[in-house]
Image (tube, rainbow, N blue to C red; front, side):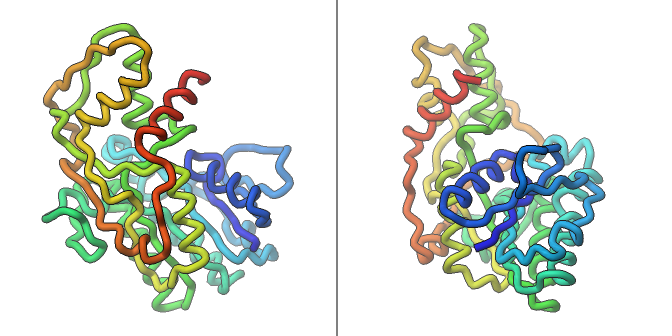
Length: 297
C-alpha cells in the first residue's frame, strides 16, 4: 500500500507515519516543515499548497489528512485562518485527488466538536450537529466537502470524529497544561468546575482505528466516532494524572468555563466496534506513559 500522511509532522500525523512505515507500507509524509533527510516527504505551504503537485504521478492508494488547526480559542481569534486550514485545504486536497488520482481513498480527521453540546448521551453519529465554535463549524463544513466529493465525483471519503485524543508528542491541551502547571510548585488553578466530562482515547488506538477503516471502511462519505465510549469526569482524570507525580499537587477548579468548550461528551462507538476495534491502551497506562514522556521534554 502506498499511503500519504498530510500533516505528518503533527501529533497524530507523526504517529500515523511511523506506524505505516513500520508496517511495511510505502508511507509518504507531507507538511509545512522543511525536511531534507526524508526522501519520501513533500513540503507544502500552510494556506497556499499546490496539492496537484503533491499527488501528481505518485499514485497513492490512501491519503490520511492529519493537518489543520486544532484550537478552539484560536478559531475564535483567527477564524479565517482556521477556515483555510480546516476547510478550504480539504477541498483543495480532494480536488487534487479528483484530477490526478481518483482511486485514492481519503480519510479526513474531523472532531467531536461538530456535536457541540449534544442533546443526549452517548453521542451517535446521526445526532443533531450543533457546533459551538468556529473550529467545530469548520470541521463540519469539511465533512460536507468529503460527502460532496463522494456523491458527485465518486472519490472514496470518510471522516473520523475524534474525541479527546492524548499521548506522547502532544504539547498542548489538558494533560500538557496539567503537567506544566504541576511542575511549577505553585497551587494549580484549572478551568471549569471539574464536573465536565470527556471521552479520552490514546493516539495508538486512534492509529489502530485508521488502519481498520482503511482495510474495512465503506468510504461512502460517512462519519465515524473515534473514542472509547467511556465518560470520564475532568476532576477524576486530573486526580489520576496528578497521581503520577512523586509529590502531591495542590489544585483547584476556578469554576469558569471557556467559550466554545462543551460540557459533557461520551461517544457511541458501535461503528468502530463493528470494524473490529478493541481498546489497547488503558487510560491509566496512557497517562503514565504521557507523564514519563513529558519528563524527558
